[in-house]
Length: 254
Image (cartoon, rainbow, N blue to C red; front, side, top):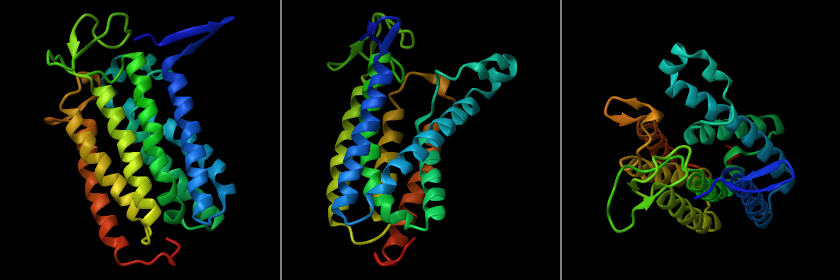
């Protein structure tokens, strides 16, 4: 895999950045289409995208800094590296929080919109994991099974070693989750229900995939990785929201 795909003049197109860009565009287009179909005002989608991406990137970076806090204490210059190192959970939670603030300011129903948008978040994540594959980050643990993969020129993954294909499995999982949530969103009549299923399905899937990750720099909490630890709370929040959504009708704003 090659992260540097091609160059135009002095501009190099990186696979990771390209996949992130494609994911954001695909998420925007599919979310806008779904919102229009549901009868909601699609003019809110672009501002929500800007808020979500902006705050999501910042929170993803902050959570990454948290996972390497001990290293930062030894070498504070790590704080200057803003181009590498992000934690997906930080982006998800920060983006959702930003969307909530926007909806409060605009006085529109938070879950009314989030339920239509959140399937597209999974779509963006699927493309993002393809970017991870091209860059070689988020790589798997050593593995010599029939579906193993070997990097040869990666700046992140160990080269020349058979690894578990966590990026590919994560990407396929995210794309499947997008399709499942899209079906649920089309039939949903309870606010918060689609979001609840996203939180549950994603966190459980992420928890399991983490067992096969090989990049230990992400930090640990006891015997769990940082993402597994967060997944426990996200799963609980998802089940709580699912229970709560069963007691609300679509006429409620939040």
